Length: 161
Image 1 (cartoon, one colour):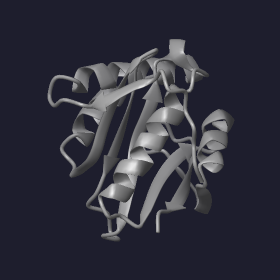
Image 2 (cartoon, one colour):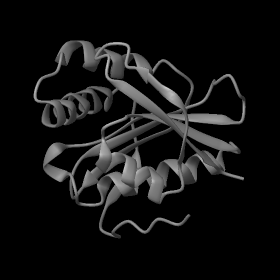
Image 3 (cartoon, rainbow, N blue to C red):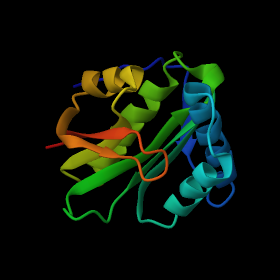
Image 4 (cartoon, rainbow, N blue to C red):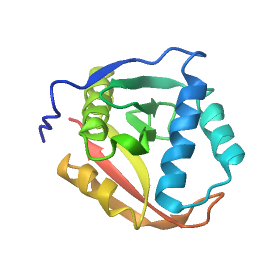
């Protein structure tokens, strides 16, 4: 399914290690905005540690709002990539940045020769689920508890072939 994010959104390849703290901060701010409270250091450390995994695409949105997406390989299924993180600074929610980052992630995953892209999302995150399903992701499996926050996480998959 084609996604048409606004043309004025600027996305660039993320730079390691320079952008890692920026991304950890965006993630923590996004969670705090959504949930009210968050174990900031534990969540930031989870983001930092994800950059040790094999990376398919690391993208940073810089305009009109900041955000990032991290797609990894190294899954059980070799043709499957995993959208581990996607977040937009809370001040930019609803501006199309998340949709643009998702479209960028899908395009780069497809270019990398992967046949599917999976992700997990909080089962009650209706806004994110709407973005994913508009892009063609479908839910699979039963929700599992988040390892730190313990809320239910639902898996979604997009076939890329």
